[in-house]
Structure formats: structure tokens, C-alpha cells
Image 1 (cartoon, rainbow, N blue to C red):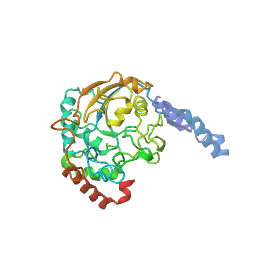
Image 2: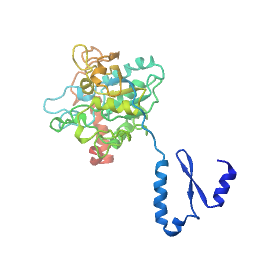
Image 3: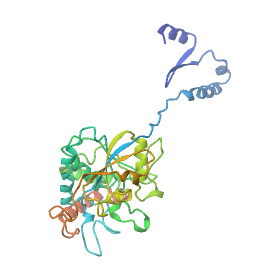
Image 4: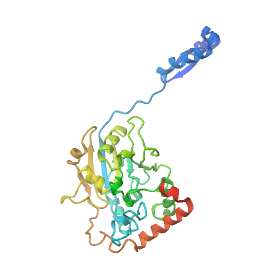
Amino acid sequence: MQPAMALFMVAFGFALAPTAVGFRLKSSAYSNESLADPEAELAAEEELAEPYAEKVAAPAPGPVTLYVMRHAEGCHNMKADWYYHAHKGLKGWRDPTLTAHGKVQAEAAQEFFKTLNSESIEHVFTSPMRRAQQTAILALRGTQFENMPLQVAPFANEAGHIDVVSTIENKPTSPAFQNCLFAKEASTYGDRGNEPNLQRCIFRSATCQVKDDNSGLKYSDESKETDPQEFANWVTSTHPNSNVLLATHSNWARKAGLRNENGSKVDWGSVYKVVLAPGQDIHDAVQQATRMFSGTPKDDPVWGKTVGNANTNPECMADITLKEACLKELGEAVYYS
């Protein structure tokens, strides 16, 4: 609009109202309706402005190249006393950490990620469990993806959340409690664990903040078991035409159809490449999956399953000490919330 025309309009009682596509005229002092009924004018203006309201168009769904990584060994993967496991079952501590072997398993994947170009991974998602977050942090350290923001993703948690089989190792603590733990583990994980970009949430409908405004998808109380298909639908609608890394769990992979050649669970720290098409059944996509990094099998003679009792393992017991300290600092409600 020319400056002279704009001055003419203002001089004669016209205001310029911004819209998503420019400006529109809005009558002010010379409106008979405004003198007679200001509320009527306001209603009329709101009705007129509605079509001009700025709207963000939902992206068109598109294919996603997904790298699925199983977390490394956690304390819950170790053996313990038959009557009590400090990191598993119905009575232990929530959200188990990685074992010493698990940290090595996660770090082993660094060599694979170094072989990828910088465009190969554009988003890094993890499940809400700390062991998946820890695995992603260690696996990407020293690579071109080291400082990429981490985000907790909907539909990426471990299976086993149905009430009758709900067990401690598959329940995260609250975001604040996880932040407390990561702050105390800064010597191992740096500041990646409690950075602002790590958008944690507990996957309950009332508190989960990870939701796509366009699709409305989020984790709900009615869908407590992990759901790879929902994740596939979500990621192809919210991050179309992108390359994504997901640090998740063996039962998530198994439900998606990913297994070892002998039918067993995928190995700790292993990475599979799956190309997802919008609306595609994830099981069909998995049929064409490529194993990019083999990871560490349980029976590996050096870095496989940790021998011993999880209830006395130094790494696992140190994690309980950290949780006791955070519990004292934050209170029991924060641990459970």
C-alpha cells in the first residue's frame, strides 16, 4: 500500500488491521453502527476478521526414514533374587539405569553413527525411560549428531503397561525426578540429560505435553501398551520427509516386527533402518528393514549380559543411592507424578 493512501485512510477514520495476507480496512469513527451499538460493531468485526486469522497449515504426511535403536543393558536386565529385584517387578525402583556393560554397548554404536552424513539424522527421539535417553546420549557422543536436541516421543515406551502386568522397570519417574538424576550423573552424561530441549512427559492423557496440534495424537490412558503403528502414523504426519532416530525398547521393536534372524529380541544397542510411508502398516515396512549396526548380544563373551546379582551390583546400587537422594530433595510425590 502506498504511504499517501495510508495517510488518507487514517485521516478519514479508517484503521488498518493486520491479517495473515496483508491488511484490511476497519471502519472506526465514521461507523453509524459503532455509535448506535458498540457491541454489535465488535461482533461484526470479529466475524469479518475470522477468515483473515492466521492459520498454520498442517504439513502433508510424507515418508520417514527411521533408525530404530534398542537401548543398551539396564539393571533390570540382570538377574537378582527370585523374591525381590531392586530394579524390576512390582516392588523395585522405577526407571532403571544402564549397567557398566550397557554404557560400553551404547558407546560401541558411535562408530556406526560416525559413518553417516550430517543429513542422515534430523531428529532424535527417545522413549520416556531413562535407559533409552542414556543410550542415545552415549551413542551419539563424539559424532556429528552429538548436540542434536533429544525429544521424548509419543508411542515409544516399553510394553507391559497394562495394569495386570504393570512392572516397575517400565514406569518412568516424573520429568523433574529424571532431571534430578541426570544432574547427579553429569560426569557421565554431561548436561544432555537435563537440557531444556529434552521435552519429557509422562504418557498420561492429563499431563503429556508431547501432542501434535494438527493430528491430536498423544499417548493416553486407554493405550498404555507401546504402539509402534501409532508412532509410525504420528511421525509421518508431524515430521514428513525427514530422517529420524528413535531410541526405544526390545518389546517395541518386537511388536513392530523387528527381530533377530532366529526370532529372538533385537540385541542391545542394535540399529535398524526402516522406511515408513504415510498410512503404511509398520509390519510391512519392517519386512524391508536393514540392520545397520548389530549391537551386543546377551551371550557376547566380553560385553554381553552382566554376571552377578543386580541387588548387589555396584553400578545398580549407586543408582539407588541417587534415587534416594532425589527422593529426599524432591519428595515422594515428584517421584510418582
